[in-house]
Every structure is written in structure tokens, then in C-alpha cells.
Length: 374
Ligand code: HEM
Image 1 (spheres, helix red, strand yellow):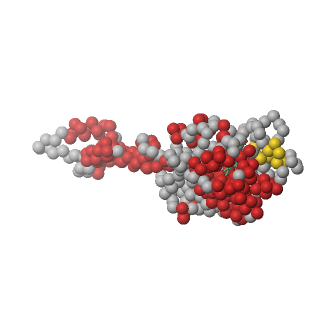
Image 2: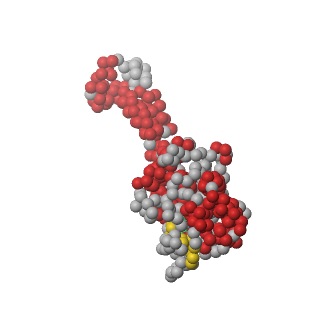
Image 3: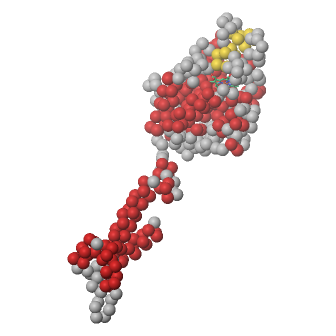
């Protein structure tokens, strides 16, 4: 730009001092080449015959041309900065998404949930919730590593952990939403999808804060941070205790198993926990406490089935919720009182989804999204 404006200044300087008569100028314009030579021959100034024409019309033409070129160049610079080695406008524009932007993303996820009803029991909701939980449940309070900040499950080491088998379906489900809203981070999107899934499956409102950033592969957590379904109460306490949860919260979170099912080709276990796997209720606790459960006779990992219908299942860790005295007291409360379950579930899930995130938005300013039922 600087050299272009220097050219313009020079051109204008040589074009300005026009003292020739109008007729001379017109003649020059009409026959530029001939007059050019004539003028050159004619214009050598002598003291007796001063130069009659000291102007530079071709300089003027060049000047006007340069002016036009610069104007066009500057216009291009403003509209297409990437041609000049600058970041494109889209990239440099600072977007500060607001509640409405996130609500729009929520609505897109909700709409996709409704449209894509040919999956599993008729909804991607359960697997979306599981994605959000497994993104968050890697948190280690002592080292501050893991948690929902980072979306590191996008990378092979973590995505390939046995516990995450099948979650590609949830990540792929969200890809078009991410493509349509590139400003949202994967980590904020996955958690927003978890919130949306809970609310769209008629669960409680779960408050949400944005602020998660995506991290690179070096932030992948080691395998083994998520619970092993074949273990007992001490394992549950060790895993959820590492994240900073109490017994009450562990039991409240387990109520998520009212939703979805186990897939033989993913975890090795098989079947749903309840008769309504796409609606969140306190049925998980009711069924645990009211039904009779026995070992399933099959060629698979140890799991339980309901004696009456043999169509429902419980994992060994689920059975610990009624075997352990402290856990059981909470399960009984939740079986009796769905509102209490919804309240404690919402509180614990909100906390789970925020593990390891350095928010700049304070807790009091969490958002609550409108669901399709509002
Ligand atoms: C001791 C703790 C837990 C254990 C051992 C456990 C284990 C499992 C297993 C083995 C599956 C079956 C996966 C498959 O085969 O597709 C599953 C599914 C599921 N889990 Fe958990 N889980 C635990 C806690 C949680 C928590 C805290 C949540 C959420 C707050 C949760 C939400 C779900 C959901 C929604 C599904 C169904 C996924 C689907 O239908 O695809 N789980 N869990």
C-alpha cells in the first residue's frame, strides 16, 4: 500500500502543473502519440522561448489510473483481507455468543433428536447423555486433569478406551450441528447435548454454563478412569470419590440408568434397565427395590435380569445401590419421591458436567434452556 501511494503522489505531482492552453491539451488528447513527440521536441526550454507547456498529461492519465487501482485495491483489502495475507473477516470477527445462540443450538439438537428416531429404542438421547458423562467423568480432583474441558475423546487414545465403545454414534450425531455452528467448541457442544437429552427425555432442567475449550491430544486421560460395571461399592466410591462426589450424588447420578440400554457389541452387557428407556423417571430405583433380580444365565459377563419378565437388566454396580446400606437409603428416598430425585439428579449432573472447567461466567449466571415441552 505504501509504495502504491508513493506512485500516486509522484504521478499527481508530475500531472499538476498544467499551464498549456486548452487547445494544446485537446490536441494532445486527440493525437497523443504524435503530439507527444512534438511536445518533447518543442518543450526543451530555452531562455528566449520558455516552455509553453510544462504539464504532464500522460502523468495525469497514469495518476487517475493509479488512483482507480488503489481505490479498487483498498476495497479488495477491506472485503478480502485474506488476499493480502491477513486473516479473513470471518476468522477475525470476534463473536461473543449469547444465550439465544446456545438456545438455537439446543433447538437444533432437539430437532435432530425428534427427526432421527430410527436409532435403538427410538432416540439418540441416552447415548448423547452417556457421551457427556464420559467426557466429564474422567476428572481427577487431585491433579485437576480430565473433565468436560477439552473434548479429548475426539482423539484415538481416549476414543478407543473400552468404556467409550459406541460413543462414536453420539459424536457423529452432533457433527452436523457443529458444522452449522462452528463457533461452539466440541466440549461445550457435547455437554449442551447432554443437557438437551435429559430435558428432551422429560427429565429436569439442568442449568448450563459455556466456557469449555477444546484441547489437543496431549490432554487425553489415561484408560481406567471410568467405572467398571463388574465391580462393587468400594470401586464406585473410589471412582466417584476421585471426582469429589458424595454417596448421595453417586446414587442420584446412577438414576440415569432409567435411560438407554446395554449393547452386547459395546460393553458386552445386554438389555435395558426400564420399560421406558427414552423417558427419565425414578423407575430405576423402583425396579431395583421392587423387582426380584437373579443372575442372567447366558454366555456373557455377569449381569442380572428381572425374574418376572426376564426383559430388564441390572449391572453388578447397579445392584450395589441396594446392597450398600448408605447407597440404599438414598435409593429408597428417590424411589418414593420423583421430585426429590429430579432435584438431586439435576444438581449432581450440573456439577458433573462442569468438572475441570475454568469458567469465567459465575455460577449465579448459569442458563436454563427452554425445552420442547415448555
Ligand atoms: C458405576 C457407575 C456406572 C457404570 C458402571 C456404568 C456402566 C454402563 C454400561 C456398561 C453401559 C452400557 C453401555 C453400552 O453397552 O452401550 C451404560 C450405559 C449408560 N450409562 Fe452408565 N454407568 C455408570 C454411571 C452412569 C452415569 C453417572 C450416567 C449419567 C449420569 C450414566 C448414563 C448411562 C446412559 C444414559 C447409558 C445408556 C447408553 C445407551 O443407551 O447407549 N451411567 N453404563
